[in-house]
Length: 274
Image 1: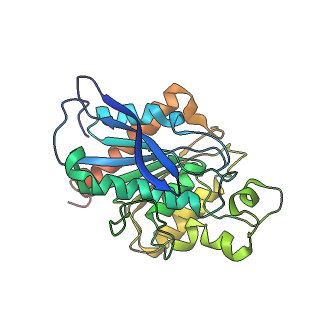
Image 2: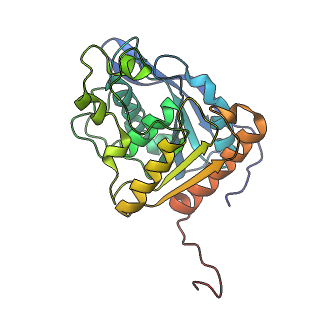
């Protein structure tokens, strides 16, 4: 387990990580106590049904992940009322490219950039992990890769449905179609090369059914990808807004990223498999 660092987390607010047209894309940057080089990085993506919310929602994760040695970036993205799909994915890809392009300056190991998100942000986190064609966008740092080393997704929508007068309809916009919904569905991209993925869900979620994570887990597992699923009994949507659950989710994320990216290692139990 990564050690908890002592000292003060340094926060830079309103960092511009990209542009789209004349619109600046901003995030808040969280530096671990003591600085250092070759730190793991993490892009942190807020939820809100793609039509609401802002990066301040996951400030807790930015601060706490920095205390475990991660350089964190809570990023904004264009909401569906401003621009339809795939603008949201293009903007979070711009955030990942920016972190990789600035890796030396930020003290980040460019091979150890991860992503975490909640709800709609978890959907975008999974899409950032997917290998997509033609969805990179023009948010800045062209030619720099937006790939991530691992994904954490807390109560994620994994299959987008083309339904009128629903949040998915707002996401897809006036050009919405079944084909566009499929393009926006993380489950479509499950393959052996998908980054190690942590899925977290409550089994009392009435907004994003837990079956979204169950199915994503099954499909990734069948494809041969590395995936874990953690289910909280009786927990509704947004359960990690409660401090004790936020701490539990944080520990799961830190432990997963440590085992899969920071210090990769198998699970060896003496007398069982080693």
